[in-house]
Length: 140
Image 1 (cartoon, rainbow, N blue to C red):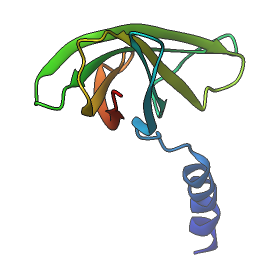
Image 2: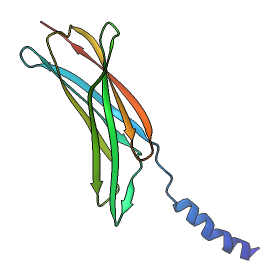
Image 3: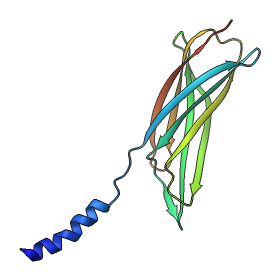
Image 4: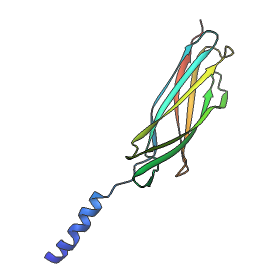
């Protein structure tokens, strides 16, 4: 019986120390717009974590691509108002990354509640997630 315990003990220790893969997720969405004369500047962001990382010679790298859609107060969806790629590397595991969007909205945009939808793809796993945030334009 003691031999079985001695054999199982290292297995239990090893399995408890193994890292569980973190779930890919988006969090902390923010969006606001402010007037810059005849236009608005929309700033939106979120953070991503749990994406796949490649390790090469103690260098970790991750690649995320994103696009943003804008839903107007009347329900129209304006696709791909912004897009980009985040290609990050570090000598330590990357905990999370910030995804930022900055878009100029001309004077054709009316007052009301808008929604920005950020679509983010982990290019290494091909998983895609979306996160939304409402903001308001108030035209004087």
